[in-house]
Length: 327
Image (cartoon, rainbow, N blue to C red; front, side, top):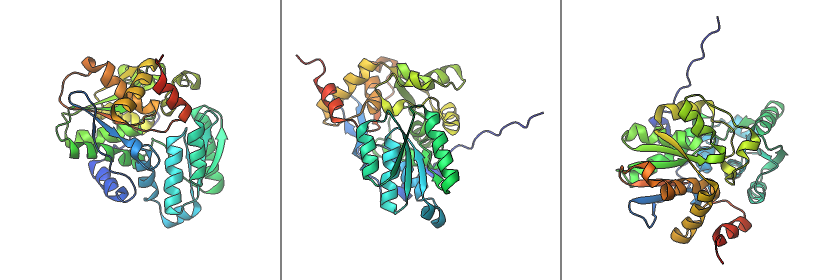
């Protein structure tokens, strides 16, 4: 008879608070920015040096390495924002870094990852392509993996976003979080629910790449194909399934996961830029879309916060989003 697998250990509030202290000298403490609607705030992680929240987990993971691990270097795999975060943090800490990226990664994210000094290796578009190549490089070269989301250090780093929201808005009623592999929502939910359980945590993802939504509703973690998740403009949300540890956090702490359309996320990116002067990539715009176009479904539970997870997008796409619908 097979031995049952023990459930993964959830990230503790102490671990998140430790991460907050550890990474404080290296990341921006982003403010809450009022959106011109009643009781609606944005948490713009686009203001980080690499333009996305991923820097928090990358620094927390790499600052946890031993001197020997630092000397040998790290390897990561990502479609963009985690790639840039690892490259930047490694550069700042003097750690060699190799980053595996898909061939459909946005050109700007690819260029910035290289500009931060990482050795970039290109593979196919599937999440498994990146994972397998990173694992092989780790084994061949003795590099320490810095996973994009399925890792306690990454989750704890992301959780610092939640701590900051409650520091600035202690009575936050609902926090909207983009969902990809689950690193951000795992950390934010773990932090917030262990401090203020009554605050609702709602994940948001595109309806054409809704693996987390389907998993949450059915109670069974599902996997979408690379072609399925590739249909969304939100390149940062094209991960095909939630990570193991992330799924455990979602099941324990998250109140709901909803979806938005491609049209809605495009409109939300435009509205955010025009109405708050904040640039958001499509992956970060999904939460704003939920607040703008699905407000009734969210309920009235007090102040609403949408995490703007990143602002890295090609200039041509920004122009397209801003001029959409103009004569």
